Each structure stands twice: as structure tokens, then as C-alpha cells.
Length: 354
Ligand SMILES: N=C(N)NCCCC[C@H](N)C(=O)O
Ligand SMILES: O=C(O)CCC(=O)C(=O)O
Ligand SMILES: [Fe+2]
Image 1 (cartoon, rainbow, N blue to C red):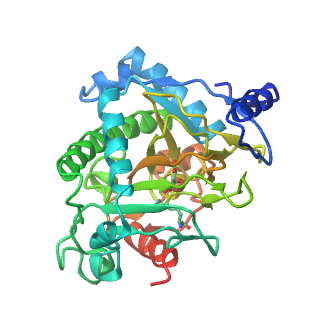
Image 2 (image 1 turned 30 degrees about the vertical axis):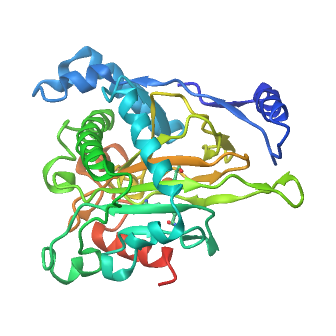
């Protein structure tokens, strides 16, 4: 897996933005990352003999390299049509184009189980307001479903009335993404040297998935006629197992930190998902895989949309290092067990000054 920052990328990005006449970058880097074609895994994923399929073994090796080296990877061959990836982003853009009075009808609050719309600056990372607006969704939770452990996150998703097909489209997308993430997690289970169903059942058989539909305004400042440096989302790792990002094809903004501590631009590749590892996969793998640090900087004049799906453990699962991962790392667990719902609530409460 070639993951390296290349200097020539400097010129590529600089030229690109020069032509638009508006540019400002602190550091320019382009990254070369092999894209993992997971089609063998997607088509064989329901077979009991998954581990014996040579195509699947190849995917598992590639996933293992990607997870160890960069902690993120692009996937193609995932079976989700480009038209759906694009339609979802378009509908999200249409929603953010609406006036604030319309958007705030589905306002996020503790009373909505932290589901709904948050305006620019409401989400906080590393103590600073992020320059993004978003709709947050989670697996619906009935009152009392997880007792007191669940109270903070109880609720149903809030869907806007406009655009009219918003809800049906997102619900279709969620079903497909859950299924896709489950398959990639089977590949990751094999990559770690375990049984393919290691994350099914008790760990993530009833995933407390989340989805964030995010919009990052362009950062052209009319007064100074310059691009302002705008942090769309400060550096963080995601909370669960695996994140699948369907990002805007037209703006370079996402960056991940690689093993050498360099921030790498994750340039859009149309038709792919970007996958990154969350905190709970770090724990399960006993640190064999690290949770990917990433951030979003929209230094362009264009509005950027990103649709981010988080595949997480079951709400009440105690996540701890898996036996087969411990065996590979000297037999000792490096992490205490953590109840996923507790980890999530702790994070979610810190995200909003509510
Ligand atoms: N559900 C997930 N993973 N959301 C990721 C959001 C990261 C930013 C958040 N303000 C933070 O500081 O964590
Ligand atoms: O905007 C993106 O592409 C990534 C956003 C993100 O990292 C997050 O919401 O956790
Ligand atoms: Fe993230």
C-alpha cells in the first residue's frame, strides 16, 4: 500500500487554486493511496467459507496494510451506484440552501436525543466552534430500551419536509451503508486474523450507527477579497468502529494524519468511499490498528458537502480487546473494557454547549 506525501502534489494543488484566482494554503500535499477494490468481499460476504476465497484473502491483506499504515483507505467495488452517492449529496446541499427559519424546524437539542439540525458554530471540537452546519442522525432508540444507560440518546430522527424525498432517500442509503460497513468489518476481522463474523452478534450485530450530513461554507471573505482559513472540523478521531465518508467531489478539504505525523489531503475520488478507523476498533484490535486522526479545512470559495456514516458497536456492548488480537500482541490487553454508549454520551455532551 503506497501511502506517501509527494512534493509534486504541491504544484498540482497550487495550480488548481491559482486558476480559480483564490487560494491560500498553509501546506500543500497530495497523497497517493491505492484504492482497495472490495468487490470480491462484497459478493462473497454471505458465504460461510469467506476466509477460503482467494479474492477475499487479497482484499483482507490490502485492508490490513491500509489499516496499519495510514488508518484510512478509499474503497471501490462497493456496489453502491454513483447516482445514489450523488443524489444523497445533492439533497443535502438543497437542504442547506434553505433559509435558517426552515432548517431550524428540526433543531438538535438534548430533548431530541441530540438528533437534528445544528447551525454553523454550534458543534465544538478542541474547544473551538467548527465552521460547519449539519444534521445528526442515530439509530432510533425507544424510551427505556437501554434503561438509564440509554436515556441521553433516546429519540427518533428528525427529517426535514424539504426536499420532499429527503427521508426516503436517507433511509434507503442507511440500509445500504449498514450492510456495506458490516461486510467491510468482516474483511477487517479476517485482516486481523480472526473469524469473519468477529464483529457480528455481540459487538455490532445491532449497530448503534450514526450519520452526519454536513455542509461547510466556502471561506471567501468579500471584504478582504481573500480566502480565510476556516476550520470546518478540528482534529479528532471517530468514536466507533468504522466510518464511511461520501465526500464532495469538488473540494479538497479532508486531511488525515499518517504514522509519520504528516497531515495528508484526502483528495476526492468520485465513486469511492473513504473509510477510517474509530476508537472502538482500536480497542477491539488491542491497538494493532490505531484510530485515524483527521480534520476538515475548507480553504476554497466553494460550499462543501459530506455525508458521513459511522458504523458503531451495539449501544450496550462492553468493548474490549478481542482474544485473537491479544494473542497477536503478547497476550495482554492494553485497554480497559468500555461500554460504547457511555463513550458516545461523553463525546456527544462535549460537542455542544447545550
Ligand atoms: N459521531 C462522530 N464520530 N462524530 C465525529 C465528530 C467529531 C467532532 C466532534 N466535535 C468531536 O470533538 O468529537
Ligand atoms: O467532512 C468530512 O468529510 C469528515 C467529517 C468528520 O470527520 C466527522 O464528522 O466525523
Ligand atoms: Fe470524523
